[in-house]
Image (cartoon, rainbow, N blue to C red; front, side, top):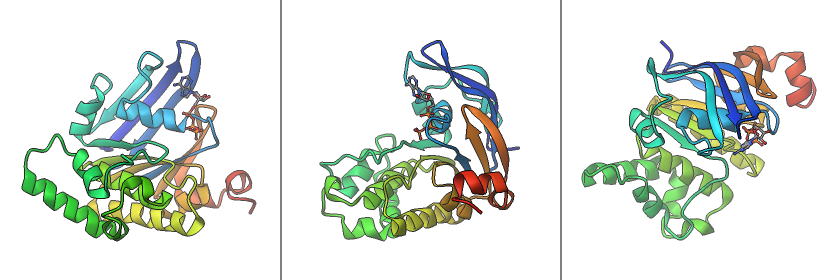
Length: 244
Ligand code: ATP
């Protein structure tokens, strides 16, 4: 059984605009899967439908099922989905700018009462992200874009998720940092066993690390398969990988 299954999911904004048109996706347990496609294809909307963070009163799943570990989660509110093990890192590095990295991590843990466990988790994050340890005295607003992205991911990992939803982690980063972020994502997946559903416009970088991918165009899946198969597909090469 897959960890996450979307079956024929449809999302409508404002009662009229069909942003996601019958999408089916599977993320295996401990899998690393990408959702690729151009601006506006509906990628972020799909992640939000999984975490429950669609704009209240505006975005609505109007058809289909979203199952996590075999149970439909559509009726659950976002905090309950986090408790089940689903965590979403939204696009655009939303960290608390006036807090240090450690304080940012602590702010993610109100649901834990066990202080020793929280301290252990924070230690783990600083070991996993040595750059954050180096900048531990700086306020997050002064960290570089890449460091802020790492902090946003570390904060999500504080909830000890089974599934990490990542929206455009490489957006706006210098090329060497893009590689570093993708390296970290594969390590989170391989070493910590966290499944990842990754939204990316940078198809080339994403296909290097994921096992499988779905290509979305105007709210529909137009292609899917293993990373290898998609990388060698001439249409994908032309449209997303800068020519073959
Ligand atoms: P991007 O990389 O630009 O975020 P995307 O593939 O993630 O692109 P979405 O953000 O999911 O695309 O948007 C899909 C469509 O839904 C777009 O046409 C967008 O304008 C529309 N949309 C997104 N959010 C809302 C909203 N809150 N209300 C109304 N329409 C929305």
